[in-house]
Length: 71
Image (cartoon, rainbow, N blue to C red; front, side):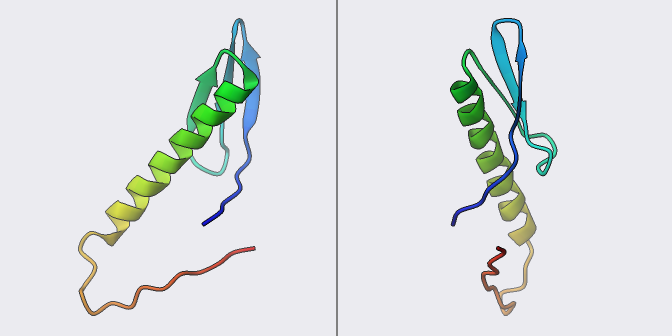
């Protein structure tokens, strides 16, 4: 599944810091802009995985689970 999110990247001294306005709590950092973006992508992936797992706990076994695609 491919998702696209906004990365806001700013320089802070010798570091680049990044955050994603669509995913509260998703932050990244790195010595380069690319490292900060990769760190942010990893944070987004972990947050979404945790939210999915948390949301599925306690779902009744007879519930229908389908995929929805958003363009």
